[in-house]
Every structure is written in C-alpha cells, then in structure tokens.
Length: 179
Image 1 (cartoon, helix red, strand yellow):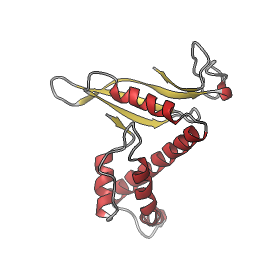
Image 2 (tube, one colour):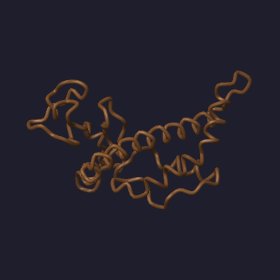
Image 3 (cartoon, one colour):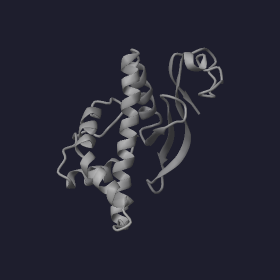
C-alpha cells in the first residue's frame, strides 16, 4: 500500500464537513487523485477560517482543533505538491513513468509493506519510508527509506550534481528509485 498522508484521519475530518471523498484511497494508480483535489478545494474556506482563527491572539485553538487544522493543511500541501508533479509528468509525456514508479513502490515486498511518500528537496521528487509489518505484533516497523528522484537535463540525467545530488549509472530522464 502507498500512502501520501493519513487517509483515515483526513477522511473523518472531511466527512464531518459534509464533503465527499472518493471511495478508493489515493494510491499509485492516481485514479482517485482528482476526487481528493476537489475535496480539498471544497474545504478551502474551512481551512482558511481555521488558519485565521489560529493566527488570532483572541482565539486559541484547542489541541483537537490544532490537530484537525494541521491534518487538513498537511493533506492540502501534499496533494498540491502531488498535483504539480502530476501536471509536470503529463506536460512532459512522462505520466506513465511516474505511475510505474509509484506502482513499483506500492508492490515492493511480500504484500506486508506500507510506503509513506513525502516531498523531497529535489525538484519533482519524493522521499519515502518503507514499513513492513512485524510478524509478531502486526504493527508496521520501519524497514528502509529512500527517494523517488526525478532526473533529466537539470541534473545531467543523474550525475550527482545539484539540484538532486543523486547518481545514476546511466543518464536517466524520469524517476529513479534511490535507497
């Protein structure tokens, strides 16, 4: 399973606001991506109101309200970044390459893994943390981490230079998995 953010908590908050989310979680296929974008767009007034309230000295958010705000703001930022990478991939004819690498990460292991994806410092790239279920407890335990790094003319296909500082054995135009 691939995870861009905590879908369970996000889904609960969104449903409390009466906004519909796709039945299918956001995954490597990106099929439900548009539904998540639409839900976050619909929540913008709510997020803005919470942001304004959190900045006001007169009204202090409770711990629960802060958690809810940060969950929504975090999901918004991650979906917005993912949207920019998806748009880039579509505009450059590389959307299939992007989906292929997400699918690779999603299917890595023996079916007992979860991958958490985050924005990386390298342009159009992601960092990830791979978790594997503990055989005794069933709890996810960190297994290894890495990056799904975009290479191209901006880093000479992965020669180790800025802005990615990642090396490929042969020049690449697209995403590579680095661990």
